[in-house]
Length: 103
Image (cartoon, rainbow, N blue to C red; front, side, top):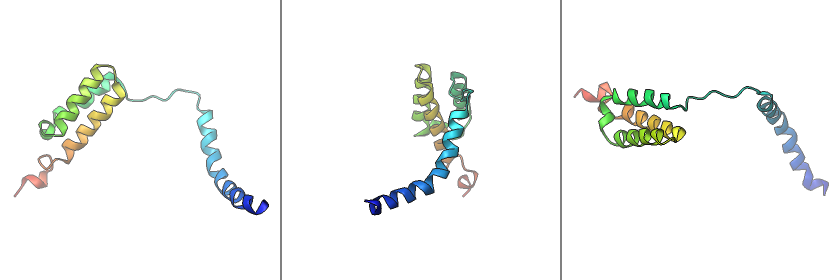
């Protein structure tokens, strides 16, 4: 039986020093974390998206519209995620990249 437990004990002994500091820091945090998942931040992201030339192209347009709708219906975290995806899609668009526009 001790032969079967030896590998498990070895794994525990090697990983425990890595896990303990993380667990201690999570429990020591007494203040709440401040996130940017607010309706105001939705507006900031929507304004940034609207300023990009590729915002009218798919998938940026539909992702942005869905994000604004979700934020307006109170699903702020999901709306922010959609708006961030729309921004990434608009920035990755060939129309947005300066080198792709030149022949």
